[in-house]
Image 1: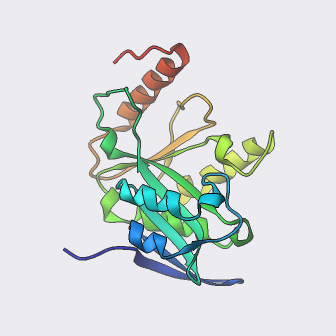
Image 2: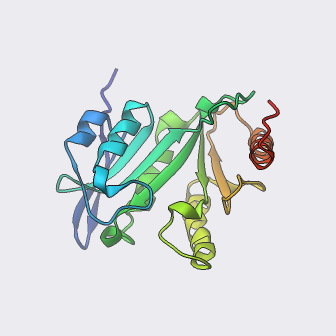
Image 3: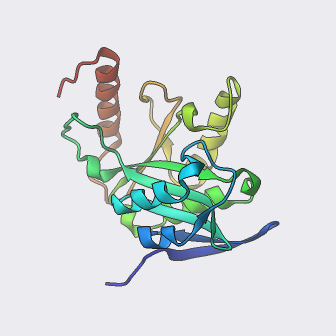
Amino acid sequence: MQDRSCELYKRLDTPQGPVEIRRTCDADSIRRLRLAQGFGYFINPVMGVEPLAKAAERGDYVALGIHDNEIVGFLVAYRWTLEGLPSRIAFEDIYDIATEVSRKWRKMGIGSTLLEATVKDPFFDDKVLMIRGNPDYWDCYGEQCKVYSMFIMEIPTMYYGFEKLPVSMPGDLFTIVRIGPKARVRKEDLVSLILRLARSIESEFYPF
């Protein structure tokens, strides 16, 4: 089997220098890198690269934007698991995306290319990719978050096959999903699942 550890997907030329977009990054490769300044809404910068390395060790999918051995952007697609909530739908088929780009590296195409590299990986052909609009993890405040939510949805839905679901979890402004062409899970399954989970959370009762 071909080794795909931190596979190079694309090189970007940016105003601040070249950035390598790499995917399927393993823990050892991640730990050989540094974390750039300017993060903090999804991972604690005090911990450096360790949260990303731990994600890779759990079997989550990690893609990185790297400049001069420094991580300037990341995307983690992690298995959507909710402790104590068994479901008829296989959670291992659903991956929730978390992504962030260092502040000084934003608006250079790094975030969208990380998403492109992930969506185009055959690994996700039989899986569901999900992006949840939770403002607790965004670099915005108050009414800015509503505007930002439209910005976040634009590229995935216009270019990468995501579509908006009519339901979302409590606290989320939206949920968009990309259902792989070979996925066992249907859109109707996802809507039903999220509705049941949302009602369970609101009532603190888990009817499974």
